Image (cartoon, rainbow, N blue to C red):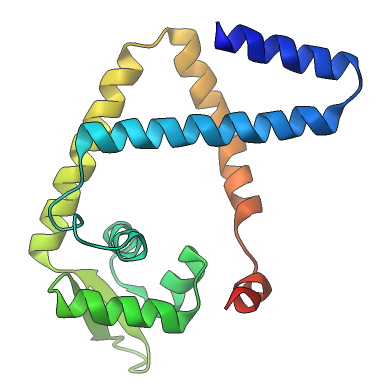
Length: 175
C-alpha cells in the first residue's frame, strides 16, 4: 500500500513538473529504506563480540581492514573520509585492544600496514557470514522481479555512493 502511495505521489509531482520535490522524496525514501534494512539486519545478526564494545568509527575501521588486509593508515583514512590523524588514533586504540596489528611497509618504513589479529578476523568473518546468510535467505523469499530490480539498482547505488564521497578539501574543512 505505501509503495502505491509513493508511486502515486511521484506521478503527481512529475505531472506538476516539480522535479525538485521528486528528488527530495526519493532521497528521503532511499534513506528510510536503507536505514530500515540496516536496523533489521543488525537486530537479526547482532554484532560480533569483537565489535560490540567499539565505537562506530572503530568498528568501521575493523570492517575496512578485514576487507583490505595490509591497507595503510592513509588509504584507510581516504576510504573512510577521515583525516589520517583520526585514523591513526583509532589504530592505536584498536592495537591496544588486541584487534589490529600495525607493521611497517617493507619498501617504505614510514608507511604502516594494518591487519586484523586472528581472533578479531575470525569473529568479524563469522558475523559477516551470519549477515550474508540472513540477506540471502530474505532475497530467496523475494519475487524474481524484485531480486532483479535490486540487482539493477546496484550500479546506480555505487554511483550515488561515489557522489557522496567527500573530497579531500571537504574532509580537511570538517576538521
